Image (cartoon, rainbow, N blue to C red; front, top):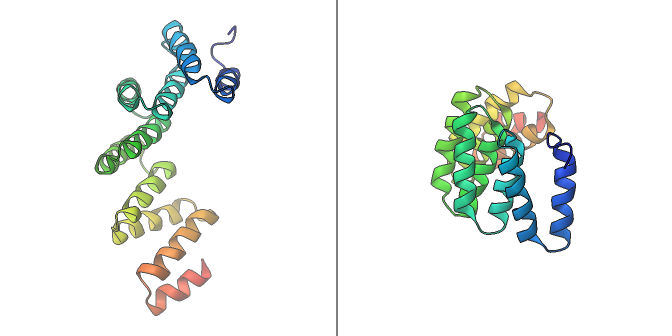
Length: 169
């Protein structure tokens, strides 16, 4: 590609390979691209996602870990690595990863939402509630956050006060 910095043409090309059921060709192309342009972290993340989707979770983890060593504030890499852990059924590794991401990116709503969902999925409702409360303060206009918070209040904390609050949300 003559414009290695642009992610869109790269994504278009990879999607074309995938549509034609040529995942190995897509992976090979991206691996070449990453070798030629090691500074382009978005291409590496994209390769990691492709690894994850083609059953190469170990390669994905290695790549993403390296990205986070170079750029510890990179939210998209935390998100992708969490997806790798989920695919591998290593859900116990997701929470520490997200907490590490939040140390680097205080109050990042993407990571906070993932953390809230992680707590919720594992039945730690109070911790989930704490995250949703924080999110509601950070993004008071977010319909998704209000909705998740309302559902959590109704299903897990159904006091009179919480039910009327859920209605307001």
